[in-house]
Image 1 (tube, helix red, strand yellow):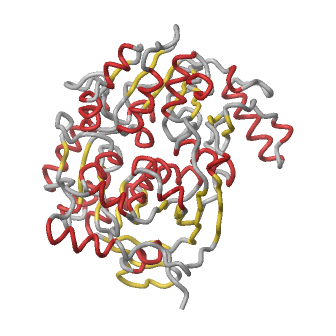
Image 2 (cartoon, helix red, strand yellow):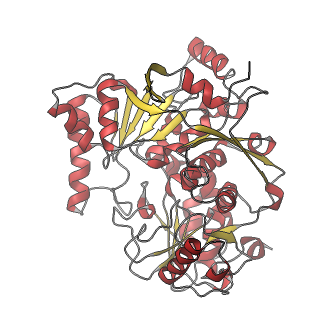
Image 3 (tube, rainbow, N blue to C red):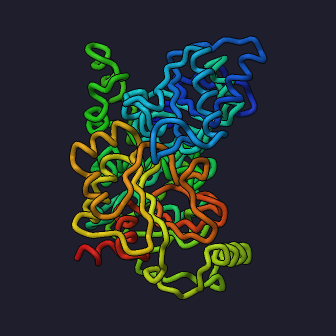
Length: 467
């Protein structure tokens, strides 16, 4: 009998019933809830006169629409109404909630792991595509739609079709100032924005085992940008050390029993995957995006590509459209591209390790004239930890604005957004047209690269800056 993959084990252990036609009824252990995708879900419960099946399996927090400049009255009426509606809904249905002014508030994909709500071996969903982040813990985690959020609230189950499996084996070691974000961008550039569509992607190999949890979360977070709804990393000693003593993690004998089970989850040595991809990290250099999809990325030492060199007519047309939107000319060195804004934060790169990396670049330097730069911690707890280390002072002395936690400029649903034509060095996960504001131009990169760009006033190779 052929061995099973991590995905197989997670899937098989949560199948409630085979519905035929390739679909099953899948049990959902936990759901993260935020203010943007939940109103329709709660309303569906009211309309159907249904209660919440298991309130303790949900955790709610406001993150997408909240202001990060100050805490208090939310000026934007839509954002204020969204947060108020979330408060009313969680109160009515007794859902555990992390208030906006509490020490627990933050981005759902940061506070989930931070509190121990995210655990190996579970199924976890959220009305947000970057729920792939939680797969870094060996959880079967994926984003769902608003109506599906309501289904989970009422039935604790979802109708799902099994995915194919892909293993991405990472070998070698990263060079100085190269990070998991660079790995993700290099991988997406290699396999394409739809390269993982239909697959559950497992990241494996010695390089993955050597990664800290923050790097693993960044890698899994970006899986959706390659088209994959599920990104996975097998739980190991690094995972257990991260989760031990977290508020919502098991304690005592329950912890011991949980770890014993989690140790059985890694893919069997003879497991067969539908697709295999290998990437040598020794070859990965700092990457930035030049276009309007995450796969339109290149090493910082490269130049803006010529659409005429595209492999197909459709790819050529997309590249031409992307360059027109981005206001770039083929052949321009990426390091010659000036910027107006810097955003360091998001569920991809708003953790304490990310802030440390950016602060190491900012220390003793200053943001270039004409550049506006903000640093937004992924959670209030992360913000407190950074302030305890003095990172906030390093940033403010270097001319960066130090903000409160939230999704911020990752998505233009709050006060932080680009003006038309503004160009941003961003640590977020998407560079689509208008993602950070109508007409805004986004270049994705790592925290170190974003900080370096802010100091230089243009895209720059952080290795050269630090040399």
